Amino acid sequence: MKRSIMKRIVLGLCLGAVLTGATLPAISVEAAAADLPKKIAAEKIGLPTSGVEVTEVTLKSFPDDRLYTAVLAKIHPVDRNAPDINIEVALPADWNGKMVQFGGGGFDGSIQQVAGHAPGESGADLTPLERGYATYGSDSGHAGEVWDAEFAANQEALRNYAHGAVKKTHDAALEIVTAFYGRQPERSYFIGGSGGGRESLQAAQRYGKDYDGIVTFYPVLNMVPKAILDSRNANALQKNNGEGWLSAEDFKVINRTYLEMTDELDGRKDNLVSNYKAAQAKTPEVLAELDKKLSPAKMETLRTFLSPMEFAYPLANGFRVMPGYVLGQEMRDKYYNQFGSAPGKRDGDMAFYSNGIAGWLTFGHGNTDMTKFDYRQHQPELQASSELLDATNIDLGKLKNHGGKLIILHGTSDQVVTPEGSIQYYKGLQQHYGQQKLDEFVRFYLVPGFGHGYGEDFTMGRSLLTDVDEWVTQGKAPEALEVMDDNAATRGRKQVLVPYTVENEEN
Image (cartoon, rainbow, N blue to C red; front, side, top):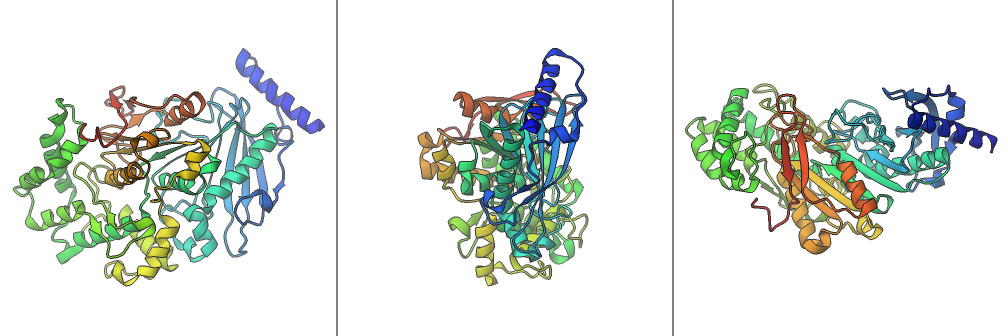
């Protein structure tokens, strides 16, 4: 009890110093960690584990000298051969009573920068931790580089990556936060982009009752079908010894032609294609113009990229059609091909991605030859992998019944994930719930020119964590959102986003 009182006095002094501008007191790690458990029992975690061990407690400071406590812990597996889930929880002295979980990216393998900005936020803004949120994240249950998929040879590690680590990390962090502050958080949020966007939708679909609000950026929600489609595209680039290879110069031609023919569809010439649906409707005209500029082999490759893929059998949640890419999606670093650096090389991000999904994460080994892979011959394995990995379930009853809110956002210039996948998912939600009921707890936005975390035409800067928090705590549903361009050359340029619905999708 004495240690608990001491730590609360310390936290009070920290907050008092912040409010008055006084010099911060000297604080020991022992004082900051006074109430933290060294171990958390397995029964405190909602999925099977061997318990949690707190391994390190460190006092750190913000640039303005305010303090926070960084806690490292390990969630031990049931299978002794499986790796731990490594987590970090950041605990600010001036806590706002809320906690937010950060999603990862790629195949994870490292703990997120929980002291950093959330997706979509401007680098000039205060981070969630600086704003008083307790923040936390994990490596999803294995250590490795972003496209290292060998962890999937262990089934528990694979299940952790798929979605189990989302729940286990939340429950462990909740125990740490509650012990540190002496009370449970008032609100619990999740925010993530890309692979972390998939994780955030897994949180909404599977563990919705744990969260009051979730923000999803450019999610890889259709992980398995995307990998198969990306493998198809990689093979198209290599066809006939790379005859149809799309070079950096080719992508410049494609993007310049697309922009010239679609920029002014919204009545403005500003290098932003704001009328997304009208621009997509002009795809045949743009392709006809490109036929005059690119070889037939290159045009065949481009049309393959743009075409959807209809599967011969259903994947998880009845998924049958994977949307293709769209004109206007830039390649990695605008014109770098995401499938490889040169003809004959399959070394781009999406090539590594498809190899990992259709290899290690589906079959548990890295021996799959993706140049010869025929998904039709592997129905049981791919259906099982899809059930585990994909976040395509339109039943959000756990989140909705808990009173939770969900914001989904996708940029129209995403370099690696087609916005049509998010549109497809949202339309499924519309059909399932009806627009009126859906509006009670879900909003979806498209951002012209925004890419996969950044866009060379537009990089949005806005805290959607603040938006979802205001929706949850004040009943202030987000409607038109003003977003600022965070790119150096055009910083301060504004766009107003309106929620996507069937009625307004032409605008």
